Length: 493
View 1: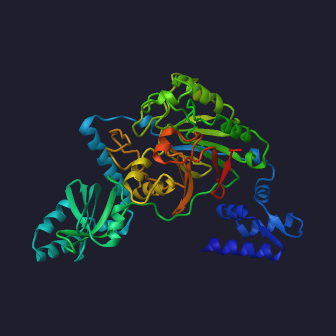
View 2: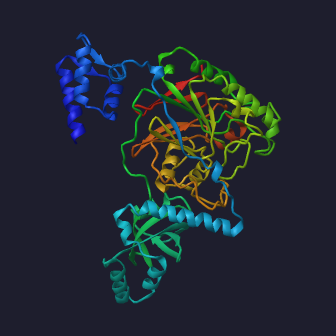
View 3: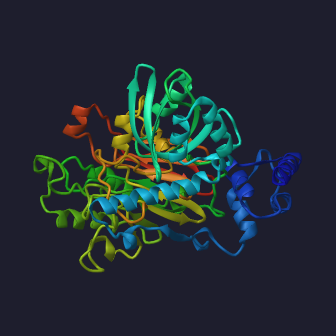
């Protein structure tokens, strides 16, 4: 509240002196750890009043760093999470048991931040209670929760079936599996929107419209409403994905136009400090039946060399971050280690401004937390969630944020490795979630997190035609890290 009053006072002062504050500058002032009112007074003192005078971001930067030009302001990039060094695949049933135990424990740590989590009962205790008489049920329930009429359980969603009286689901914790029914319209809607194998917290009551326990309310780990972090200096990140170099459908002309733009003297381009590539640099070999008929280059090594030559044209003052996708070299199961290289100078590893990361990867760009995930699991989310489609992939990405997991569903199209630790759980809330994979550009905001699917650089394939998917290629998403405002740059000229 103190900051809000300070900002309001600064805005009022500027208006009284005949000045306006540009929206980007206004957002920057709110993000900086400075005396906002005093900063505005100093800027106005140094500027000559004129008709429609405006305070810009450069005015703030010149005041705070008068001896530094934009290029000399330090830009920071740190790796918060990279699965590459931590991939230690387990084996068989024991490996998957360890994976799902890790998922359960991590998800419970997230749920423990909710006040209702103190009422969570073990499934074994609830099952024992539900088998007792009605009066016995109330006495045991009161002992467990201090609250007659409902109880709360938390577990992984094992199954979901439509019944005559509602939607029946089974949830699993360490102690057992519990089958309950969603009867009310609200409960059925929320249960239908859940991803299989995700963590869920359920408030239950005894026999409301169905035998046994019924669902009173549904709670997911979800991300909280939050104010995202912002860069304290002007800096832009460009988000792209899915080049598919080697494919007949790779739009090389448009991508070269994009690279030329990065090397231009455009004022906007001078602020670009980061290029984030969300996987599928190449089309690969043998990814799908008869792929050879859609390839210009039949050798993955040559595909990678071609991709490296293209990215070598990115100016050296732009930091390039690359994660793999399902078409790239290396294993396809999640989490994926970084694209392999035979020696330090191999392919992209030879580019001094390029950092190779695994999938998913979590990075800090000037204080802004960016979660990069290629997006393989979006296929499963879209296929199993009512109302979702490939036309609006950001809606499917929101499902992952609500589940706090990047690949919740096991056993469908997305291969998941039996790791000792589930590295797909979203433990820290990102400021930006960046994915690709579905080739459709979509940008939304969810509870303070910017949700970006960055489309592709491949025109519509035959498979996409049969699936009714219309891609939106040739676009780059530009995000102002000082304001978190996105814009779309179109290179389809």
